[in-house]
View 1: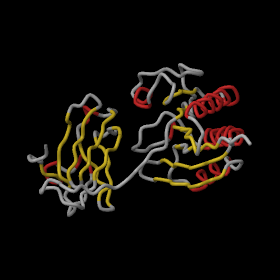
View 2 (view 1 turned 180 degrees about the horizontal axis):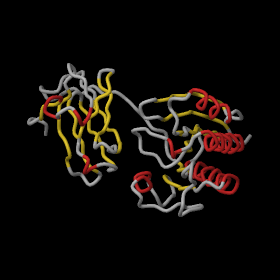
View 3 (view 1 turned 120 degrees about the vertical axis):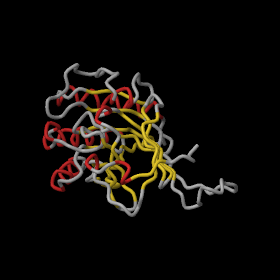
Length: 268
């Protein structure tokens, strides 16, 4: 008996606050098995985890993208996460013995239907594609289907094949004495907002870290070893280096930077 190809997809939609819209988009994927719905109101984004066989995946994803285009208008959207579309990123991930090449075929098929049926431009990224997500978000790419102008309210869709993402915790046998064992290390990609700030959640509070209006719109990376944070541009230039103060509330540019952070001189 031939083994059935199984796929997972974790599309990111640009709505994290309106439960009616989130539920409507999730319901539109009904031919698929829904594994999880994870909205983030701060980033104004929801990630929906889906799984199924090839034909159901095609129908479910196109239906969900169509519903998102109907319900989400990027012209009125505001969130701290960079985005290009109402249905922003649609990764196709292999399950079991399914190959990445099969995922690429599915990504192409979904993209063809999105452009043909919905007239929403499509970028292909990831395995076997010309572009990366960084290329697309930084304006270095042109849509592979449609364009160059994007849909006025739905933008474009980034569709691609990738391997599963793996997260894990590691405890080192040896570690620098200055780094406590409870330190959390992570890297986050973000964009500087129109006020020259980036937003970070730390100890259940949002911290709006001011960088400068001259950097608005720039794509950056936050290198976080709580409570220490480094903020760097894509070209590696260091923009800020600071330690978050858990005893203070951060309210952005109106609060002088020296009142809410202290410079770190010992980070290597």
